[in-house]
Image 1 (cartoon, rainbow, N blue to C red):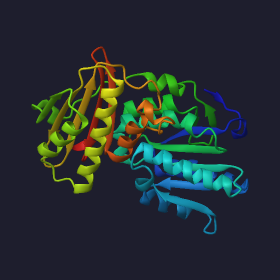
Image 2 (cartoon, rainbow, N blue to C red):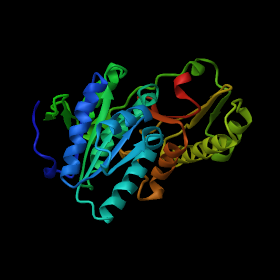
Image 3 (cartoon, one colour):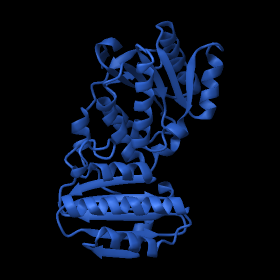
Image 4 (cartoon, one colour):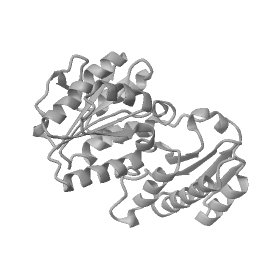
Amino acid sequence: MTTSARAGTRGYDHAAACYRSYDDLLAIVVPFVDAGLDAGETVVVSLDRDKTELVRAALPKAADIAFLVADDVYARPAAAIKSYRELMAGLVAGGARRIRIFGEVPRSALGATWDWWARYEAAVNHIYDEFPLRSMCGYDVRVTPRHVLDDVASTHPFVVTADGRHLTNDHYVEPPSFLSVSRPLTDYPIQLTPPLVDLIDPTPIAARQAVLDANRSGLTSEEVDDMLLSVTEVVTNANRHGSPPVRVRLWSDTERLVVTVHDRGTGPGDPFAGLLPAPNRSTGGFGLWLAHQLCHHVAFARDEDGFTIRLTMGDPDRG
C-alpha cells in the first residue's frame, strides 16, 4: 500500500477503517470528524446506538454533527443508496462544499445478507462519485468474518489505519469487475426440503396466486404483499428478458417466505442492477430495484444453467 492523494483529487474518497477495539474506533473517528469540522465540511456519523454514544461523548458537545441510526439507514442496500443520495443532494443544494461521513453497516449485515452489502460497497464507488464526499466505513474485525473482510479489501479504494494513515489500497477492484463475478447461492436449510410450489413458465398472475396459496409464514400482510409484488415483477422480467423455461419455486415455514425464479438466460447486463432504478423501465431494471426495496434479502447468481434470483421475506440468518 502507498500513501494516497488528498480527498480533493476525486469526487468520492471511499475508505475502509478496520479496528480491533473501541479505543481504535475512537482513534479513527475523532480525528476524522475533527478534521472535517475544522475544514468547514458537513459531517455525518451513522453508527449503532452504543457506538454513537461512545463517539458523541468523545467529541465537543457543541459540534455540529448529524448523527444517524445505522439500523435505519442500512435497512437494505438499495434503500441506503436512495437515502444517502437524497441526503447529499440536499446538503449540496444547501451550500455544502464537502461532505464527510463515517458509517458502519449493522452487525446483521455481516451474515447471510452480506452478498448484497458487498455489492453495495462496490457500487457506491460509482454511484456516489458525483458528490464532494469523503467517507469511512468501519468494520470491527472482532466480529467481522474473514470472507467479509476480503470483500471489504476489494471494494474500498483506500484504507485507514488506527494511527490515522490514509493509504491507497492495492487490493481494490473496480466496481464493474467486482460486480461481474457471480457468487454461488448457498441454500437455506429450508431449501433442502421439497418446495411447496414448483411451476414451469407461469404467468405473473399464476405465480403470484401460487405464492399466496402456499404461504405458511407468520409475516405481516404488508410483508406478504411486498413479496407478491416482488414475485410479479421478477417473473415478468424473466418472461420478457430471460430465456425459457422459467421455473418458480417456493419454500415457506412459520417465519419466512423464500422464492427462486430461474431462467436459461444470462441475467441483467447492468452490473448495478437492483441497486439503482433503470433509467428505462422497458429493460426490466425497475422491477429488480423494486424487489431490492421491498424484500429482506435479494440474491442472484449465474451459472452454466442460467440465471437465478432468490427473494426472501423474513430473517435470512435464521435459515
